[in-house]
Amino acid sequence: MDLRRQWWWWVSGVLVTATALLALGNSQHFGVIAFSNVTALVLLLLCVGLMFKASYSSHGISRGFWILMAVGFAFWASNQAGWTAYELVMRRPLPDPFWGDALLFLHVVPFMAAVALRPHRIHETKTGSFGVLNTLMLLIWWVFLYGFIVFPEEYVSLDAPVYTRSYDLLYLIESIMFLGMLGLVILNTRGDWKRIYIQLFGATALYTINSQAMNAAIIRGTYHSGDWYDLAYMTSLCWFVGIALRASNLNPKPEATGDGTIRWTALVSKLAMFAILSLPLLALWTIRFDSAPKNLRDFRLVLTLVAMLVLGALLFVKQYLLDDQLTRFLSESNQSFDNLQRLQTELVQKEKLASLGQLVAGAAHEINNPLAAILGYSELLSSNPTLTPAQASMAAKIAQQARRTRDLVADLLSFAQQTPAEKVAVDMGVLLNRAVQIEALHLDPKKIQVEARIESSLPRIWGNTNQLFQACVQVIGNAIDALEEVGGGKLSVNARREGNYVVLEFSDSGPGMREPAKVFDPFYTTKPIGKGTGLGLSATYGVVQNHEGQITCQNKPEGGALFILRFPITTQSGFAASAASEG
Image 1: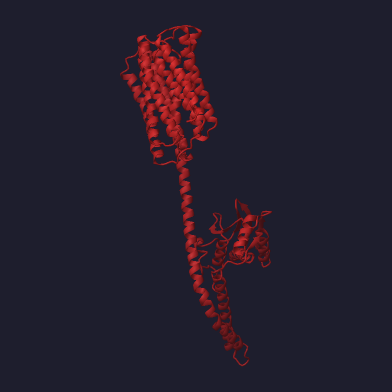
Image 2: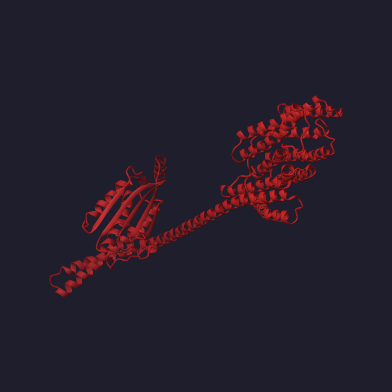
């Protein structure tokens, strides 16, 4: 520790030594009383200022911790200011009861709240609101205890001896509870925060022991400001200032959460439950066993009722937030399950396409050669004038089936050869517009209407122009075929940007898909025999996957099918990187 950090301990040593020397004389001189009161008040105000300063240099939960500590010392300083005003300004002994006693009792409540925040932990926002509500209920319960146990004999019907005993006992329990909280966090902390907690524990323990001895001396009438009891009091205050100075010179980092967070949350929740359940028990005790005068019992019952209403309202808010969180968790779980199913479907589909692609790639080449011979000889045979009409018709049918088989083999080869092709920056708006216009040329506008809504200045994507064009034509062609089956309808084509994706939607008013989950399976088709091979949408699925996109199919509630294609947007730097990798 360098000299810059030692200066306060030198000052503390001087103040403690001066207090000890004045106590030796056991004098009740005005100067001794003034020194004791003013020094204590200055030290407490110094704590308030330094801890507010520490809050400004902190962030998040740490800031809340130091603010609450500063508020607690502000209550304490208010009590000391009242004490000082009576002894120095008015030069009168403190009244019994003293209005500042309530502030002195309440100053520990913000301390408890500060430690309950656990600034040494990295907090998760999902559970933070419940911890705050539980802590708030406990703090209200402590205030209620003061009003229930101490306040009636203090202001409702003065009974100084009973009030003093009740106050001292409750203040001791409160201080012990605070020390217990500090001890618990010390066991589960390390680093700078552990040192801060240890320092707070030591200073609080010293003050608590001394305050009980001082209260006993006050009851006996043997205490006066500047007495030996002020030696430990001054030492603890100097200690608190040292902690505040240390906090201003460092910004302790929070630790990662762990099982201790769950245990603490469960403990605070159980204590809050105990606080709520204790209220009707205290009301029952007041009715059945309290021997105090009726006005005191009535006061306690009314106070208990008010506390029950306040804590009940907080419990209602907690339950509302809990229900909202459970609903959100359920929604997230359903979404995760849907994503998992979609991912599983994509993986299965990829395996199907990969296996089938390997199979048909070899088979198609072997079939092509004999198929070409069959087609050539059948056409040659059908053109022979010596054949009878029946023989010529049979030869023509052989040629027709051979051509159909040739088209099927061509589709198989196209499907099997879904290898990465040359890619460039593609304007999907222009490409989609062209696909719509080409398909619309073959339509009867009276039966089938095509409406295209393409967002202007649509971002470009990185892909192969021909493959993407064929994919769009395939989806549009499928929708048109479905509309022709029902005698007409409407096809809506939309293109827009959603976040980092270009989204294409193809929505028709047709009958919808019989089995939307199977539309991308190879050879799955609902078209009549001879009109489709069932490979078009499988090839489209492969193209979309090759472009790192997503394609989904679903039936709309009002009827008709909806195909959605998503392609990731690539920035200029992404274009360059993709081009380099392609090269």
